[in-house]
Image (cartoon, rainbow, N blue to C red; front, top):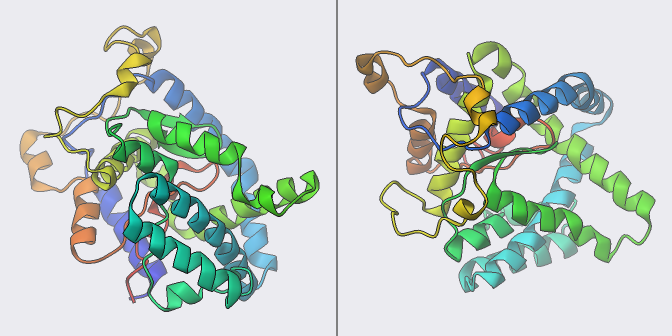
Length: 302
């Protein structure tokens, strides 16, 4: 089974199940739903059409080279994140990936480290903050970039403000141009996984939120049993029930009967099962479109 077929199968399974029984605190739901609609409009009318045009006119080897180049830069970010976490093993793996791909891979255009099956961490500053104790964090829809949390948004903002490429790209035109190219490339990669989401899911916002939070919490080790974790979000989040925006926000999917809900797995449980089978699950949002968290779901499937 190839990567694309497997990814579409997983998406179909996820859309076939009801909203998961566990609900996540969403104190910013009014804002989040608004930004979700803005992002979705931008995607439908601008980003997705451009990504389809890019796919149509750009040969596959060139697209792969572009993806590899920007993924190599993300490995640099991952290296810095793991150094801050004092994770020597992962930092060493990231350093080796960058070194090999930047030299033998012609500046990262060829993913030699991936072909050699070297560890592919892609850690972020959000992972660093989580390792420092900020595991609990509320859902937050980042403008243009889609699903995130307050913690991850802070880390992403720092990364966007001080990108690695600025170290060797001196002109603003080159910096802005590569930012646009990276966004188009990442959106093109997930076109097949996201085309039918809005038509298939009864409430795309709630589905994406619950799936994202389930997978992300699993990644950072935030489980229901972690009652002593630092909850830094409480310093800025409105009290439950105290936000007018939240009270006036559209309601999520109606609950099915308890029997039906218990008989089917949640989206997060499906992804947990994939991880147990050795299938890599990575939360990585492509520009604008929230469902891009399915990116690289089937990375380890041959």
